[in-house]
Length: 296
Image (cartoon, rainbow, N blue to C red; front, side, top):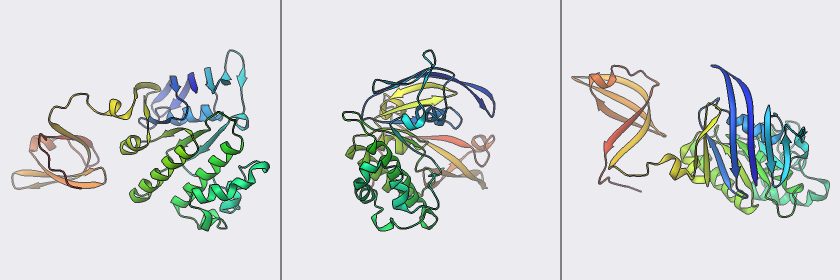
C-alpha cells in the first residue's frame, strides 16, 4: 500500500543528519517505527502527513502519488487520506469531546459520531471540555478524532492510514496496557493501516506485525518483532536490559539497585563490576537460565 523512498537533511543535537529511507508497508498492517530519539521517526510521520516535505524522493500511498520531487507533486495535508495523533493530543480546548470528534467528520457523516464515541469509551464524557479530562481520556479523544477524519473521507477498497507519534508514552503502565488493547481493537475493527512511533519493546511485540528500526536516519533492521529483537538461537542464557538506580557497598561486595522494565531488583556485584558504573547508566545483566521457574 505504501512506498517510501525519501531523503532529507535534518539538523540534530550532534550536527547534521541525513535521512535516507526506503520502505514498503503492506495494506491493513500495524507497523512500528523504533529507535533512539532524534533518529528520524517523527520526521517520517510528518513527511507522510504532508507537514514536512522530503528534499528528494517519492511517497506513494494506495497507488496515489503524494509526493514526487522530480514531478513536482506535493499534496497538501488536507488532501491526504490519513489521521494523525500527536504526543500532546492537540485538542481544541474550547470544544467539548463530542465537538472535537465531530470537527473531523464530513457533514454527510455526522451520524457516525455516536458510534465513534461509543467505540472509544467517550459517550459518558461527550459534554466535557479537554481541561476536565485525564491523560488517558484525552488520548481517546485524539484517537477518535483521527479515526473520524479518515473514515469520513474514506475510499471504498482502501485501508485508512492512521499515524501515531508515541501516543501512549505519557500514560501509566495500567492505562497504557488498557489503551493498547483498545487501539488494537480499533485497528482491526476499521481495517486500518497503522504506523506508530514507540520506544516500548513490549508495546511493539503486542501491537505490531512489522517493525522498522531506524538509527541515524537509516533503517538498520526490519521484519516481525521476534525476528528483529530476539536471538535466532537460544544459548540457555537470560539477558535483560536495566538502568542503575543506586550503588552501595556492603562488607566486601556491592549491591546494585536496578530498574528492569517497571520492577526494581537488587543484585550482588564485585568492585570490578562497579568501577565504571554510575547511577543512571543502562546496562545488560545476564544469567544462565536453562530451567527458569515461571510464575503467573
